[in-house]
Amino acid sequence: MESVFRNRGATLLMLTPALLVYTIVMLIPIVWSVTYTFQSGNAVTGFEFVGFDNWIKFFGDETAIDALWFTLRYAIVMTTLQVAAGYGLALLYIFFLRNRSSLVRATIFFPVILPTVAVALMFTRMFEAAPTAGPVNAIIMWLGGDLTDFLGDPGYSFWVIIIMDVWRSMGFYAVLLYAGLVEIPQDIMESARIDGASGWKLVRKIVFPLSLPILLSSLIFSINGTLKVFDSIVALTNGGPGSATTPLTLYMFRTSFAYGQYGYGSTVAFMLTLLCLVATIFVFRSMRKDVTR
Image (tube, rainbow, N blue to C red; front, side, top):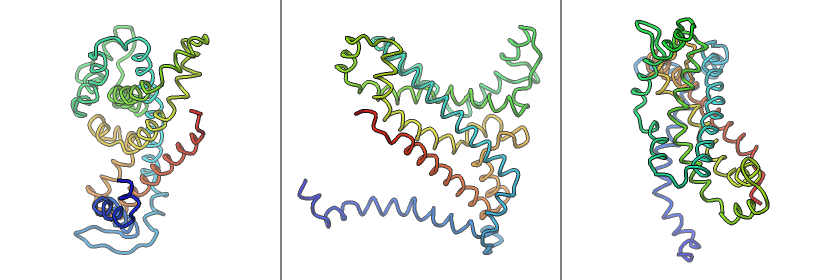
């Protein structure tokens, strides 16, 4: 096998099918989409070259800037909370629940497999204010508070989305991070315990540094997923009230397919691609130090 890999012709021949599929499925659509950013119109009315007009329009479009700001705020808050919650659950399982039944892991992972629409309907019922008060409002009023329209208020609706998505996703990150934590050599853990490290000190000095590679992967996975959030917001608030919870993905979808502005929609999509690229490079560069040495 080693002699095969040394043969450049054989290596190129084996890689060609995968490179061909990648080029057709990924590279050509990206390049095609970039060309649309310099055009206006759609497939029905035809396309017209407009230079950088779509980019100038984007930075002068208040709705687009609001969608960009919402996307960044959502991505930062969600990445922080879902990775932190997943890491906490993974540590809980490693230190306290490892000898328990796999039912615990299945219960933690269960929200991940639920359909997004079903989860959104459940949270809509939980936080609804009319025509009937949901469980959350019932508890607030029982405690003496006022009826609150959580999904009709821009400030509250953002946090309802965050609560729902953290609940849905933390099980996935718990399993992902658990897979990394169980790879930490037990002899290192035992040596640390013999030297007197336990509890929070053991986590801070041994577990956290050795789990940084899987944490890095989780952060990159999370930031790219949250920047592209779409289905959960459409199912829960549909971008409302008004456009208060409209991310770039939903704005791009409406611009392209509801208003038929393919060129401007491609500009929004390319901006989202740049955001994902910048976020990934930032996470990589901020964690370049090899702390496992």
